[in-house]
Image (cartoon, rainbow, N blue to C red):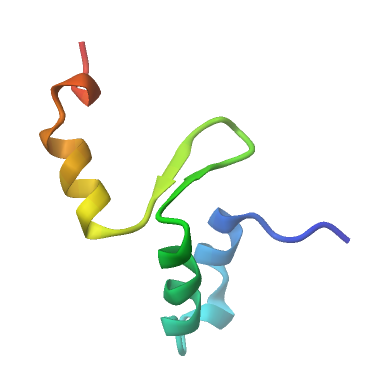
Length: 59
């Protein structure tokens, strides 16, 4: 069986009771490319950097 995607793990109800181990896993790779080609950015520093980078602004 295939491992659940990161997005599926975020939505998984079993992670809600104690999300901190999952958060620790997200911090290990703060920027991930998902199978559909989108990116998951999971730490404040990277999100703040993206928001301040003019290259990521919509055109």
